[in-house]
Image (cartoon, rainbow, N blue to C red; front, side):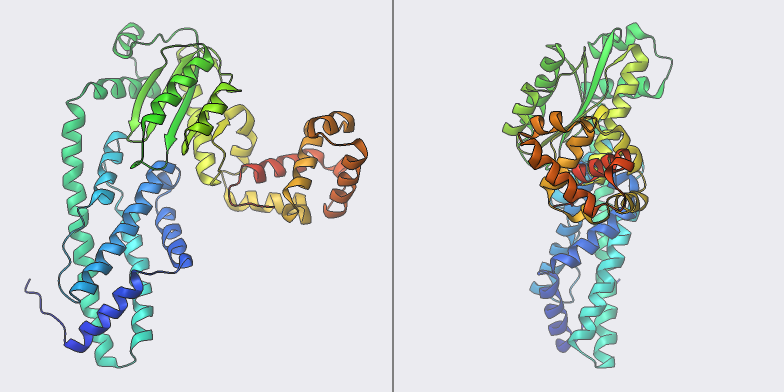
Length: 406
């Protein structure tokens, strides 16, 4: 198609609009990100992929805005920068065969609605609005189409590269095992260099910053193996910044693994339960995945989570709206109390409501503990003694929820 530049007045308006796009308010970006991730639960449940999609969409906004500040109303070339193309790598390494267009189309729709609002704030002249919106509509649509085509082409290249490497065989073997395919155990062990008999503990180790230093992932995988008593754990590259790890034996993540994660900023670890045999190999992995998804869903800032510690929280928070109702219903005003008071109640219940043990664990005088519990009873909808289990579960949900502060 022949692209015609708009009038000088509309070019000026588009430049002003683009300058606003380049300096968006934080709440606008939050709305944008939430809508994009809501369109694809598969992406939203994977913290690394979700972060990559958010970075890619932000980069596309900046790319389109910058182009229209420089040359307003002119065709915008596709964004072939590192952020959009990294999406191709993540999808291929996860074995995703179809590109999730919804996340980008929803982002395009949200951006378009915001752009229309900006346009109506810049001018009320019908002719100017008509010309400006017509040009911007064509520009955004053509830009997104071209960028998606570039990502699709990169997916093909990444798939070719992946199938030529030894990683493909290891990843394929693990996928077959997890799917329950009838692959002979001896053949699988030969491909993986890992015994599938005995006990297994699985972990998902990842970083949400795929562009950062990823050497810490391998160090964390080795430390996880050592914590389990396995000097050579099986580590599979699930994506650029995610490792699926299996170690023989049981995982004691305290204190060595915990200390290591403090040194490795940005590394997160979700640990499955220790289980036996090939079924245990699968079950421990899937429970580690469930733990990772819970951490992502709750935006948890904690670096390590064990399935054994979060199983109930993972079940309750599978439906976020229902979980929020459960917390509010059982905690009442305690939900927004300071974290010190909430943690006192949580530890007290975990110590079977034994005041002496709870005070010792919290390094408090017993009378101080009792005063805090009395204050909590004033805030709770029902006395703690009548509803201690539900209160403890609700407090656990808050403890893992990264957006909750006291």
